[in-house]
Image (cartoon, rainbow over all chains, first blue to last red; front, side, top):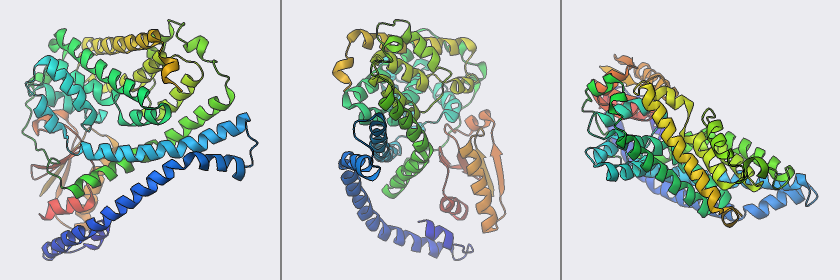
Length: 373
Length: 77
């Protein structure tokens, strides 16, 4: 596709014929790209299956590290986890990118407009996962929602779920801990988005939205990406991979390096005293520390893994992680344009409270040993 | 021809504006490229995700950075 674009330096008179050429080439190319895609998938599966022996070979044979030392454990962990997480990340970001190309913010808004609260909260939290959203669009999206009949509480369910239930976090948790922890993260994230959104709706906070918001007249707009063809959707998925994996790979490597260091050198149970389940104050503290910390999910999860494997309680770690991802200072600053201070404070209190509740719940349930390998 | 780029000033919005200016110069056409960063104006145009691009008032794309060949198509087609 790119080749066509650069060679098409035509004047307007010849452009239409060039256009026809381009479209026939692209349909011929799509056959080839399907074949390429299948090949890439096979290579992916093969590589993923042999990661453990490869990591062992690199550590023991290539680097000549003696077995069962701190250094060789740390190195093998690193050599195994980095390609594994990057492989998983690439596949899932691509898949989610394709799914997202079906859910534009405009379509989501239409689905949510005029929904009753409880049903609306559930739907909004679910749509928050699949609708493309970036915090720099939070303000126009917020106004677009509330001025066209989406209830305030339902809008909040969406705004909480969109950053909190993150596909990158989900992949990393699945890759590092297995499906149980991933499912817990998905379930509790959705639960908090639904319940806190509903609560904000009950609190009747509409007067605490900045006055100019409800006065704004939302224009007609256009749902421009709704009718993409499959080539367009695949391109959308590939763009997502380039953008997201291109942005987070360094964080993943750094995070796993930190994890590897802790894995090899810090003794088991070192975190139990300060982040164990008997330290009741550790849950609110974890939430407070998480608010000013702004990391994407990719950076935080390898740290989470290291903490968990050294005896930190699951509830405390979950609370810390959710606070880092869902309650971020930069997003508060952006939302301040449309929300009065009291609504911002309520938002932080309700979401923070929900996260703490989850933290205590999991610490009480004592599921740590059952879930974390 | 008037091309409007809507965006509050994030990296992607700047990339979009630069790309469009580049394509316009490359094609050697007469076009006004305008950057709108005022949220009220975005809302009035019905835009919920940025960056967004409108050609002569018609929204062509929202929520991502366009490709050069896409921009060419909007201009010629």
